[in-house]
Image 1 (spheres, rainbow, N blue to C red):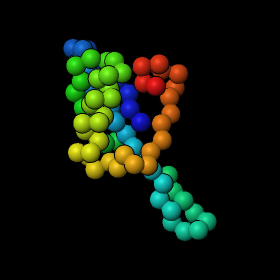
Image 2 (cartoon, one colour):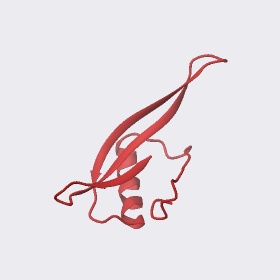
Image 3 (spheres, rainbow, N blue to C red):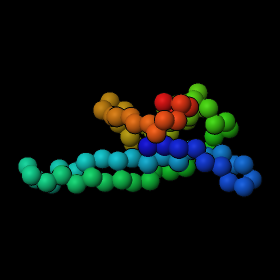
Image 4 (cartoon, rainbow, N blue to C red):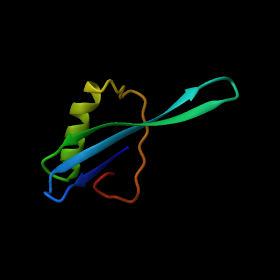
Length: 78
């Protein structure tokens, strides 16, 4: 999960969180959500978000071979 945020000085950041499942047993699975990091970005557009994620996710040891995406009607994010 990711979203752009800016503080009062207009310093733009990309906040990145991951959500994953931990299968505890055949009957029980636990959902975890962890904040990974904030990445500085120069612009709040789709190309910048994509470039930042593709640059940073491997550094954070996020495997990009099995993932899902969801959007909250934000055209830039999708």
